Amino acid sequence: MIKVQKNTSLKSVFGITLMTAALGLTACSTSVDPDVKARQDSMKSWGDAMGVMSDMAEAPETFDAEVFKEQASYLASDAATPWTHFENSEALGNATSAVWSNNDDFTAKAAHFQQVTAELDAAAQSATSIEEVLPALGAVGESCKSCHTDYKVKDNG
Ligand code: HEC
Image 1 (cartoon, rainbow, N blue to C red):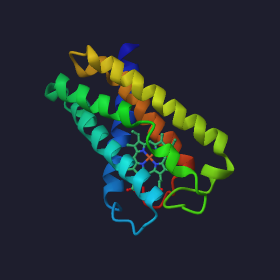
Image 2: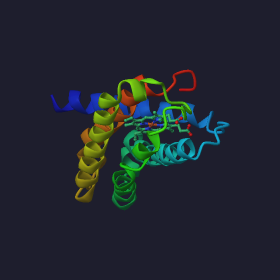
Image 3: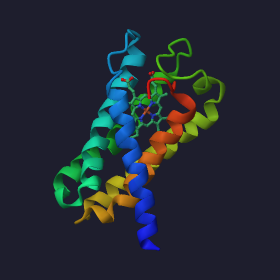
Image 4: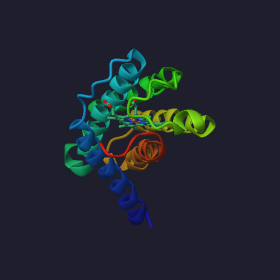
């Protein structure tokens, strides 16, 4: 039972690792709009933080509680940053128009993200092994993915 849950979490964590790796290839987008740049910069830093934590999930013996805590806290502290930069529906960047046409759902997903990153941060404070934070890390990974599915253009990952 526990093992099954763990595997599920690991799977979503690995999904994020692959996703962020793919996104890294297209990081040099030509956008100049300051809002697009601000939200992309924020997301990019989330990708980095998730990369550090996912690496520990892939190699549990490398778990470093201090580093993990730092990354989880950073993610939680920045989790509200991008959303105010989605006001101008002309500034698409790599967002889909559904961000604006389905804004209630987008906003709900943004709120959910803030919740799961706060939960990961809380779990990280007392964690002594990667196992203790895997479910929370998996939930964050799922949150990234589920929003990108609808609200981020697909071709570039
Ligand atoms: C509520 C929606 C939502 C959530 C949650 C979300 N993203 Fe995003 N993300 C987007 C949208 C929309 C874009 C496209 C933004 C743009 O190009 O203007 C994006 C773009 C990105 C990019 C590309 C940035 C660039 O330079 O073009 C990365 C990397 C990224 N997200 C990582 C993450 C990670 C990692 C998480 C989870 C820790 C996450 N995102 C959570 C909606 C979300």
